[in-house]
Length: 172
Image 1 (cartoon, rainbow, N blue to C red):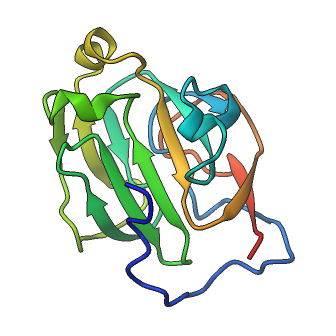
Image 2: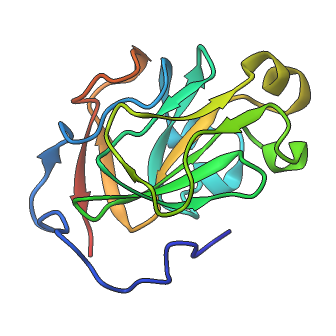
């Protein structure tokens, strides 16, 4: 799973590495409660082994694209989607913990690799109750896998589609 964005080395419109920018080009992908990535009960995410980000405790099973960009990876087991934003950020949305073991059950993917997406466009549906009953956690890690560092502007309950929830700064 590591390095699934690594097939292309070309950097396009990377954020300025020395300035922090607010995240109006990034919207909340799911209705729910934003938590720091360090609070996710999985060391791969909480120790930022895949990158910086945050978690969402979901209120429903609808995921929208947080950015304008391209779908670069729909995992075969439908539990995770990788997106490359038009600004160059690489984002992984991973529904639940250990949900790879569900082998796609409870998930409906609405996009395929190579699809262009707009922020706010629904890309995935999942059965939240099924996930809660069959996975260790329903938390949704949202990870920037391209070394982008983020700062959460807010935590707590946030509605799907809301902007200005984070700021980011590339450390490259």
